[in-house]
Length: 85
Image (tube, rainbow, N blue to C red; front, side, top):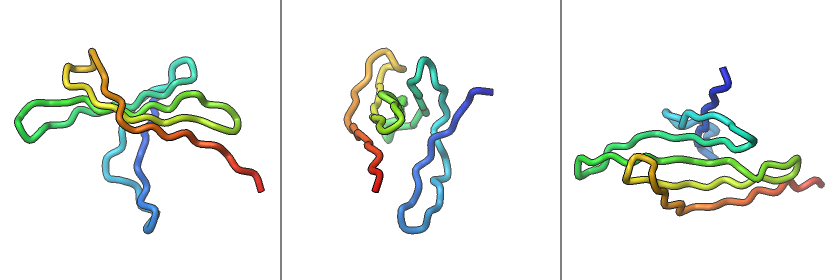
């Protein structure tokens, strides 16, 4: 179906988070989103994006939108590099 899920994994137990983010890959970029209810009753869209994917590296970034995805505030970036020993 071309639909993926992105889960957090507990580093100590190895257990997956209860709810993953659902998304798709388009042109080598994976976007995974979910809608969250805020404490004040408003909603926000959260997303995780996998991009810059090569055989030895990739980048993941996390963001939030308070206007249904029109604009995004990306607040967490991780660059991953495969280490061969």
